Length: 522
Image (tube, rainbow, N blue to C red; front, side):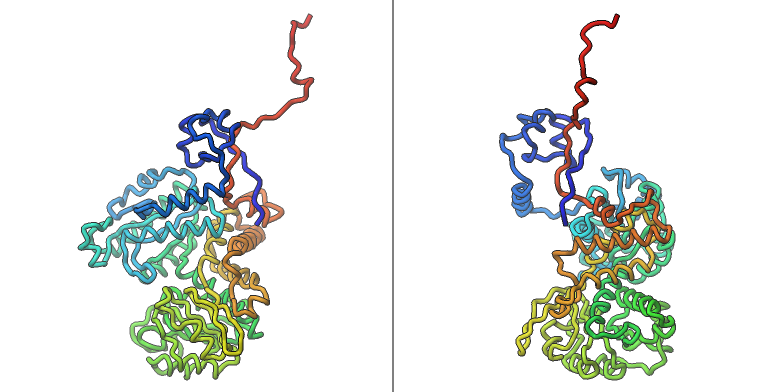
């Protein structure tokens, strides 16, 4: 991506105060002219270095840090009734994107309570690194309502509330106040991403807020989008339609249900009625195959319950259903046994097998197991990174990693750029289609189902540009006048690490206009 031209920023600050402003301070990258005009000459060593050298210096300083105390805004249940006041403590007045968690379901770690602040901090770092969002306009938030983690409750060094989690109406009222306070202070266009909320809250909060605020849940919708992107890319290899597939999920939580619903939407787009599309999707949870009549099914699971006898063993279920695609999202390491992988290869010429659980120890199978047991015929993707696999026939296959970072940075960039008020499910399907389109034929030959990670910023730009284009076509954008070149417009909104020009804007007039009057006119 070509670097943008330096921006000019106006400031009244001069001298020592300017060197203490992180938004303006260039440190040793200030030129001699800048140092003299801004009255900071002498406040800096007589040395001039480039940003590249500064990056090396920052990395060395970063490596010397001994504390990883996370930055962000901490709002506790005891702040209820005063959340607007807590928001006022944040030093930035313009916030366009928030990532919020209550720390109850941190991937691979469980309930971390207030220690979960690293999640929104990390997500927003990816907003900037992968999507070009201005970090100054991003706000990480943790909502501390307590924890069920016994170790944390007993830990004298725990930084959060030492109490059991608040639930029920009090919890809901707390969330309502937070959403209202954010929208009141930062505007209805402020994007709010929910992250790592427990299943009991994730679906209902998404359903409750999706059409009221500019919000989405990455665990449900982001995971769905990146998984469907991989499936759409895989179908370029199998040469058939999504509506021709029978898909079996190992897992029936947020991720599985989110993917399943987006697959149904994609099948409907191909022309398959919703009822028939849902019958092509089967789910397995901790109690076995989800079928009609099974006890204690949530409403979300009931939607995908089919007429069938109850079954518990995954190997037997695979042999019974004979899926064309097998997707693991239950975080059960090794769930895809040797028999299952061989059966998938027996049922299908090119079986689609996605082991999407994180971390690596929870992956349903490794890339090497999948490729070798299917004799290289499997189309594989994972949630964790795996090394390339060289087969006995000499081919080397590169497993695709279905990471949500392909999705949420581009969506955030597009939504913020055009001022969308609501983030619809259609946006996640559009995003999946754009990601799949960025995978070249050469990548597919190598087994890759996703674009190279070093192109992710360009992928985010394509996603954002498509979202912006659709928003103006559908009259849902709120930023006007409408830009003619959508991609150029989005690019202009992307954060640049290049320093702004903060010298006064000096220019000349025509000589005649500058003529000095030397005597009074008669």
